[in-house]
Amino acid sequence: MEGNIHLVKTRFGKLQEYLREFVYGGIDGAVTTFAVVAGGFGANLDPGILIILGFANLLADGFSMSVGAYLSAKSERDNFNKHEKIEYWEVENLPEVEREEIAEIYRGKGFKGELLTKIVDHICSDKDLWVSEMMKDELEMMRDSKSPFKIGLATLISFILVGFIPLMVYLWDFFFPTDLNIFLWTSILTGLAFLIVGWLKGIVNQTSALRSISETVALGLLAAVVAYYVGDILESFFI
Image 1: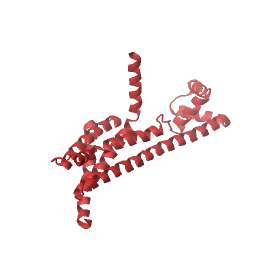
Image 2: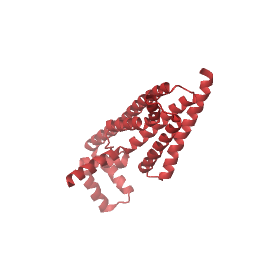
Image 3: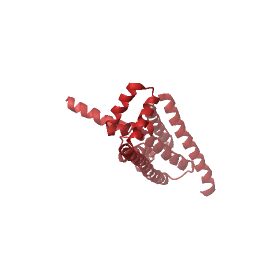
Image 4: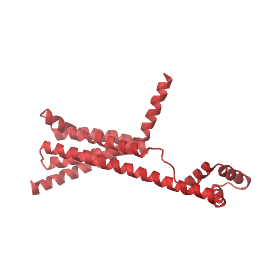
């Protein structure tokens, strides 16, 4: 039983690592898809056309954003690996220079005399520790343990899941016609999505939940208002 609980906690902890990607992917998905819906509503587009545009945007933008997140994370990892290899070469071929750099780093932290010498000797006795210290304190670079592929996947999943919400009522009404005010209910559901994602953003950024929720809802509202009036204006010209 304890083993199962530990396993669940471990897996949940792994999922938490990608909460930032989930949150920002979800925000972008909801904002962009709701903007398409609002613009189509402002232009008085047929619900069927609006659904097509919404799904085209949802899948294309979601894929584009996830690829961008993957490539960005992979680029950062490749850059770290490149500089790490350089540091290993310098440690092996220029040990005195690198040793003095370690001494300078810890001298700057306030260490001196015999204690400084012991610290430098300890660090320089372990090549991996030596390089790690140089990467962290000299280059100010830290290895990201997160997988670039999982970063892209988390972004894609959240973009599609949260971005689908503005289309739910339209899709339901298309297959099961109702007398509901579709855009009103879409706005309500999307607003709830913004509330939840905004709350999660506050957790990720360790900021006030109220402030984070307000910013997220305001962003979505502004995007929807702009899209609505753009659609309304363009409709008068082209339709």
